[in-house]
Length: 231
Image (cartoon, rainbow, N blue to C red; front, side, top):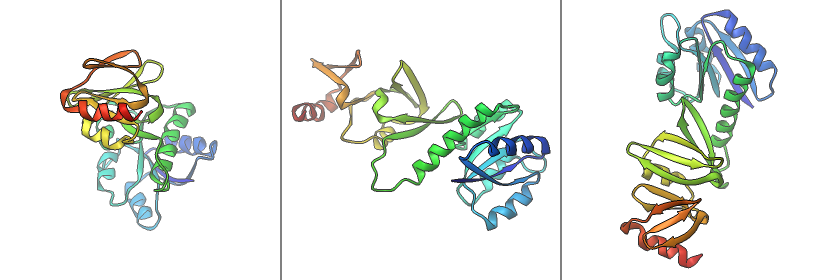
């Protein structure tokens, strides 16, 4: 169960949040606060898994408050000011709710928090079956089984997944490769990573993966041929 608190300088948004939390069994809203100082005192005594945190507040912004936290806690930013979305995203927020938001939008944000909480607390003996990346100002869960291929776009990578969808995130190829299971994925070019089971054929210096022709770089040929021979 996720234990949460909510901080907003206006009582009405807190009342709405309390009502939304009461309609789901995924989270317990332990306390609500209109003053950051009161929330700080609470957090010194009680652990918190998740913060619902307004950004535009007097004396200290929600963003500055979150930066100052010593303990690790997930955060879902809530605000009426869309210009704060990018900064919240850069702080690794779970999600960003633009007021006024519906119960359905609240549920979608809470589901991300629930899944990420489970991901963080999974047993170390279990092999993960998915990763989380940051895109569109929130966390996006991607199952390894739905990845068709990954392409480097400079400082970003594009992950092509089922249903002709793609997720673009700021990450290096080296970083994403470290997060993928080594037995299931292989880098075949400086700009491409593919799932081994998705390789349809190899012809010359190119692979066919999910109907996409992908070049094979000279530096990666040897490892690729070893994998193909073992298959």
